[in-house]
Image (cartoon, rainbow, N blue to C red):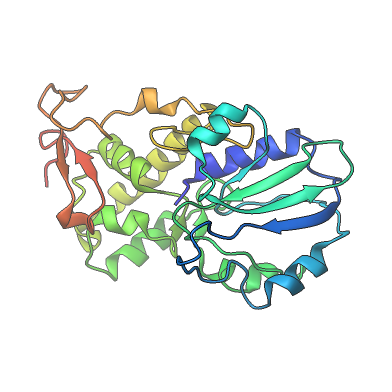
Length: 274
């Protein structure tokens, strides 16, 4: 999933680009060029036609975030480099011309979906209600997180990627957080001390804030809505550094996958002893 710094970067760029106050005058839903490829409906809980008709003529008043990728048609070469025609899913055609004329939702792996919900109670509805506390906006109580982890016996790397307890940590930042706290990625959650949970919260918030200031991590395909890359990839301590010297002790960084649900996990066996 797009991680918290990247999603918050998208939100901030959209606000600055003049999206708020724009009116949606049409919506284009892209179909796969290969007609033999089936896709599940992008729109949930109503038909795509109903979704389009309900949004036509509506004005954008606010932008909040949890997950996703939205792009405006700036810097065309970068846009096309990171987002093929197959990645484009839906475009909102905007009518006031104060900001960009088109806002495109891209989802190359087709993990996302769109829902229309009432503003006053959407946070009580699925899938929003199943997403855990926001690591930058919500108060994360160490006692709460420690209690949640004590009830389970799963590796901390896997737990950090789950979004139902705390949200916003993806694969890249999970490795960085555990390196910063000197916790082995395979250590079981019920074996963590209270002090270690406090370190996880502190390191997580520090790393995510620093990554947000760097406009995200463009280690793979992340670009913001203006097709600009982030720069936090230049500050990564362990992620993507398999068999390279640890920046702290000099021992070689190790990569594992099978043990962490086939997600690439990087750590220093010396600094992060189990």
